[in-house]
Amino acid sequence: MKKVLAWTVLLVLVLVIVIPILVIGGFHGEPRQGGSAKMAKGDHIIIKVYFHEQQKIVEIKLEEYLKGVVAAEMPAEFELEALKAQAVAARTYAVKNMTAFGGSGLAEQPGADVSTDYKQGQAWINEEALKKRWGSNYAKFWDKISQAVEETSGEVATYNGEFIQAVYHSTSGEKTASAKEVWGFDYPYLQSVPCTWDHKSPRYYDKKEFSFAQVEQLLGPETQVVAAMQNNSSGAMAILNTTESGRVGQIRIGSKVFSGAEVREKLDLRSNNFNVELKDNKIVVNTIGYGHGVGLCQYGANGMAKEGMDYRQIITKYYTGVALKNINAY
Image (cartoon, rainbow, N blue to C red; front, side, top):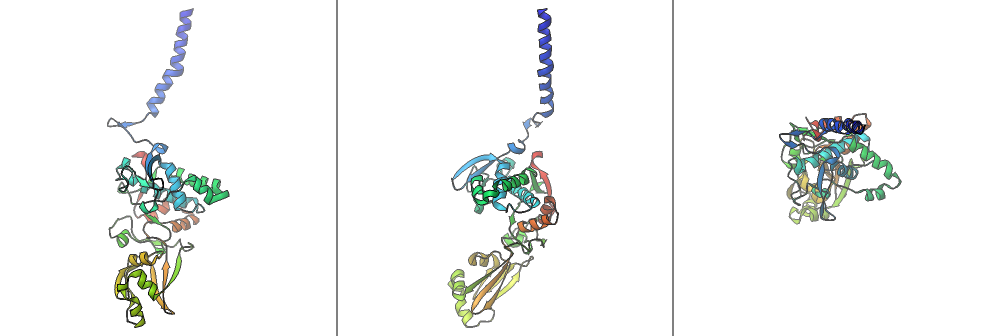
């Protein structure tokens, strides 16, 4: 009787514990190719982030990092599909830099993939700061940001199978700019495309007025702006050429020729899509758009979303010829 009982217990153990373990392990274990496990998926992908304020490198989950990026880079009031497009762009930018995916990492901080300093890449903000910024809207906005990241989990933009340089900006103004006209090097997916969805951006139009002396101080005494303007010199201030997207290519101010990008930087303009005029002994600069103008236009993305377009349509509009892939499949 004892032997029968012992065999019965053993049989139950085999049926209830051992066989299910074998079945589960066989169908859901980590797949291996060429003897090495595939990269961990989803929430398990780790990115090495340099927190510039604390001056330290921290390893955090990629998708959680992205929530802080999307919250910092795009208003939470935007449409969900626009936020999803921002999540895909931000994820693509991050993954392209990650050494785990073949990226070069952050040159300024060896051992880090990206930085929280927007001057070195993408902005990032933590939840405590967001609670102060959003106040009573914190829970609603954080849930919305999280939804945008989670519902696009792992998705990135690629061109010919390679991660793209997923740059973006606030407001393009009529057309985005190509990478070639702004930075001098060409990418087939960073071309100038029409943008008619950002007209309601609060950053769409701006005007600045400068005295002749101010302009000479900002651009340099060698420009001799004051003397040129006082003598009513012909052509003392004129746009010489424009880029494909209508931005200023070269402009003469006083006795010197500048690129549109130089004038934008020195006069602290919102973009290099501007015109200049003389009015009441002042130089008036009218600017359209905000940012370098290349890639995804954030206010344009929101305008597209308001018209019912989804994040896939937004991404493929601003990044020419790209395909969406999932890094979980790499």
